[in-house]
Length: 115
Length: 108
Image 1 (cartoon, each protein chain N blue to C red):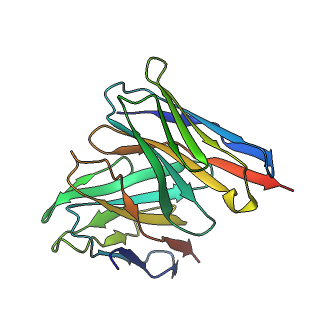
Image 2: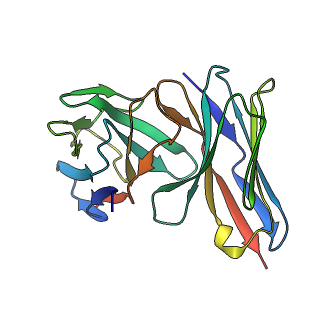
């Protein structure tokens, strides 16, 4: 079955540590996205990529980095520069941005906690 | 960019209808969407409506679009306990913009 897989489901980070969240899709989607979700604030876009080897900053990119070396994979690194990283992180993918009748497909999320 | 707003909470009795409202700012949005999120899970696409439509019905779900007022609503008929979740409205410009989500609580 086609889908989008995020791992791990739960992640704990120590102060000053970088961590990487995995996102893999087998839907042959061109575009991929990372969102952060905090209670009462909805979804905020961190980074997005419309094509391999290219990505753009979203609304809250500071303290995060991404790569898009393969169409199927869009990992997110939360760096030590991100001062408040505890949140629920969601990865999504879609067909070409101008063909949005199916919206986005979401992964099941990674909950990151700073300890 | 697009701003999408929704009320944060809705409480409804089991068996009644739920109506979740949303407003958006960009009149050029082509598609508008409703997503459902259950606790600890990702978002699931419930339904969408194309901007040249006024209404779309899909089993218990009815979407109404007032393009003049930039107002979108989702009606859930015969609300069940399994409908308790957060519901997100989303509109597209070059990417999807999401509202803050409406937490729907179904009480017996």
